[in-house]
Length: 343
Image 1 (cartoon, helix red, strand yellow):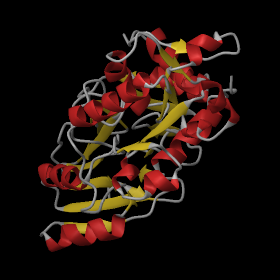
Image 2 (cartoon, helix red, strand yellow):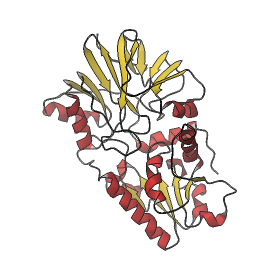
Image 3 (cartoon, rainbow, N blue to C red):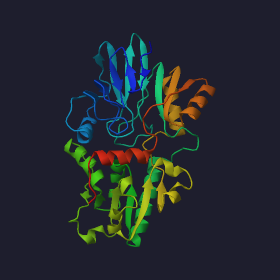
Image 4 (cartoon, helix red, strand yellow):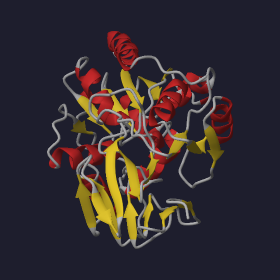
């Protein structure tokens, strides 16, 4: 019997009697991170990292939550379970499970470049590794984070020079927090859409120190909206909410902006290939570092990626799950579930 089975409810460990990131309600759920396609409502008990707990409470409401630290093993029905940094977003974790000498690791979503706030990705040796493959094609190769930040700051300063607002479209949970530091080097006031602000406050109330921001409300003075630097989720893109910042330019922060033409198709003025996922070299680096005999690839370009792994001498297998493979799609769901109204 394998240590993880792929079922219609999610990844199931029969020996431990728990699921990992189930997409239907179960008795025991181990959660890798707080994005809505991995942390869903309806389970009776949730186990997650300490930093993920306040985000789950914000998104899923009151529930039975248990949180642990990274590299703090616990026993669940004789199965050794531990969480390890995934580097995806704040609190994101890989799940390592061990039983009778056999080790499996589920990565959830991850990236290998340290963004400075999400925890540095930790390679975990195992016999079987389950990897995402959101950007599992060779065309996806990110610039270093600092270079992307420099591009964003140059774009903002160009807009400021002609008194235009800069509206950056970014994930409410993940990229929005990463953007705060570089943007604070361009302005004393960063304005947030309500969906981004709610996540921001959940983190601040949990003890995180983040740059100062202001939520855009109907009472925000009009003069503060002109020439502003704004972070908004994908659902705000092209909406009437955006008009209050006119004249403005829109910049989309997404790994999909790596593909020429996507900026134009989004009707954006600028595209920045800033992602919370591993690129092609990052995926390969992570898989090789695990020394796994078998790698299961899911949610993304799993067919191409698993085939390439097999060509490289690593047994690659393709599996289908219900996790999202579109950065903006997951973001919109998060906004709806945080019940934010447009200001």
